[in-house]
Length: 306
Image 1 (cartoon, rainbow, N blue to C red):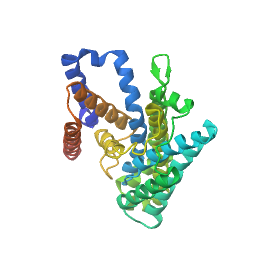
Image 2: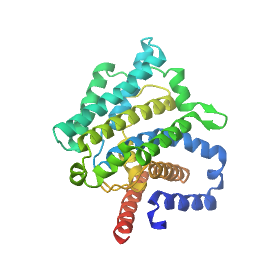
Image 3: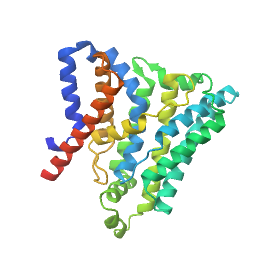
Image 4: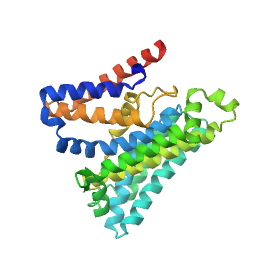
């Protein structure tokens, strides 16, 4: 039973114990609320990545989607569009990007890595053409509220993440689509012979990933507060890391929404602890890579040994 818990759970226990011994203020309620706000954009994007990873696929275009959403929102507001329309356009962009990825992967049977990398390049180019290479203006107040606002002590972004996490858990564990995703990811051939619409399921997974990337882009844009040409570039690796730490194995049918949320929380806490101890960006990347490698090895060994 204990071996079935994702690596992120044990990682969080270890990090919390270390923080309690060395930096007690790190676990205070106000600081935890700050961490929750910081973790929310990555957490939302990682939930979207969970759908495609569970379905034996991958989405490397999420960073470009986040940047494109940021440009849409900052430039559309600059041109006087209503905030609700701007947000609708941003979410629609995520849906379209996910749809294109899914169609290329399923209809052409192309590699998800190649397809989503190509889509990322195209979306980035369209973003530069649309913006003229300018980063844009400040975000609308509604988007800022999504990224920075609070309801009592709770950050709005954290509530959005929690809501999407619950929705993702229900979809993956309680609805037919979720059972199809895990079945197709575990063994596509057996799923196809069982009558499961494997291609439709994979298409839906990529659409969900694009939508969640757009929502994460909106929340991150609100947190940053201004337009940026390079926003979200590091979210590709981090989102995959959160999914792996949550217990997912490519094509293994493992993992899920709760595991991914724990993985996101672990990454956020580790990176903030490293900041407290004065570790610079190269050191953070090395630690993050080591955490992913160790988690994947331990979890694989646990699955093979069970």
